[in-house]
Image (cartoon, rainbow, N blue to C red; front, side, top):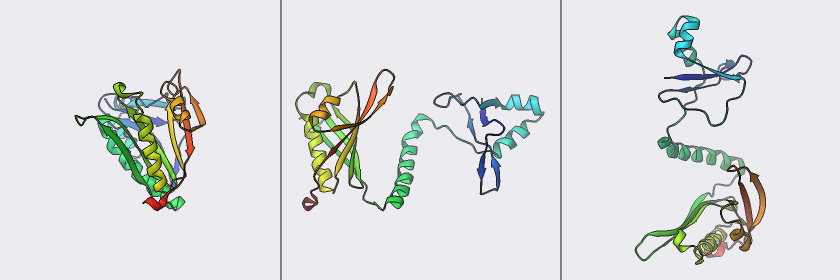
Length: 213
């Protein structure tokens, strides 16, 4: 089944390209899926059969869809590829806007004697700032200093890349005390992410050490 979500009358976006208002909408084919979160009260939906009954022509429905801005909801397997596409495009814009074209990925890991990854982190550096996106230590290896060693290695590398601070976030059910012991200062709390918990944003000033590059 295909479902068409479009804006109610009066809720349209103006397109300078065509010099006329265009409807916004979501066209979902195959298994019915929902847009994340509730649709605004101004939004309503109808499918091709409903349109045919109301207007007497399925072709009219298809023509209306073709004239509208279609939003395609991706299958989960396509999201990684889409994320890379978006990261590249947003970086292009951000670099042009700020003048910083120095973005580099950052990663570090620890392996067991068998070659298995037992701890790792990843992130990136850009514009004198290092962002740690993920830090993980295998449950059996926690409490042995691997997380601290990884984070200190990332901070040292970030300093070599002219970074002045490290930014990261953690949930209240993870390890906020761990980061605070290492000198990270709380910047913001987002409550209800996820429900019943919170997401905490931390930052830490570090020394730049470009001479070691």
